[in-house]
Image (tube, rainbow, N blue to C red):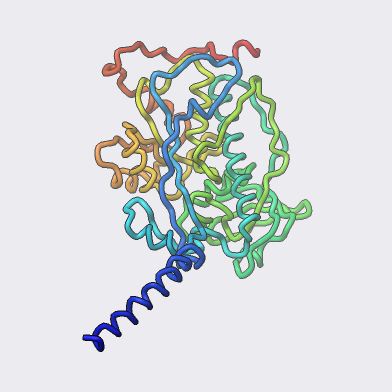
Length: 358
């Protein structure tokens, strides 16, 4: 018996010795992939503030966003295998090669701020304000090593258009590129030293739910300035970065500006990049966003039209509404029935909070 007990003591000793090492490794050792999961829904009326706006909507507009961990610990990665709403993605889909973490975070935050300003401009124009964007352009800061962009673009180049559509902001460039398949050529009109040239680059998407950098470039928007007739403040809420919430920010601003309640008493979530023209572009992680919105109690989900099939496949009972423009989104919401909510919908009106500023 004594001879049999000795191996047991040895095995127990090994467990006692190795278990703390395994726990430490779980906290210290890096995981082999990035992690992405849906963020909690947050009502836009709590994030958007317009001076002079006092109406409370009968329903809610919600942001649908993702939480991305580009450098999880090994323990986090192992735990994610047990969670159905967490996806494991390659590191390059969570963190771009060629940029360190702080540079990437700054880029992502710039895109988020741009998407909010574009949302303000689009909503103000739709509400009847004359808003002009002055001297805005997309300037190349650098190119990522080993990409085709490194051979075709230089710092200081100005990207004036992508696939025939003029761009004034990096967020708009990202929105256009995300509508292309990876590797599909994107035709750019570029200005260099006062001369125009045309460049073709393969579409390359940025990390998940930040949508940047794209095309193997790091760009910045310069001169993006406009005068708004009212003061608007937008809190980013659950969005960590990138332009994917542009459509919903714009709807939130518009609903705060106007006497019309576009929610019709419903719970409406959605996602979509937005351009100054009002065009709506694709986003990352549409499946997870739809599932999170439905789990959070949303009745409707506004999705970029190009991603309608993926969004509808992810929804169970929630209705998916595909849109190509901000105007289409407004029209779709105005067609929703309010009969189940027992209140009177205020029709579209010319009097808004802008009236006091005119």
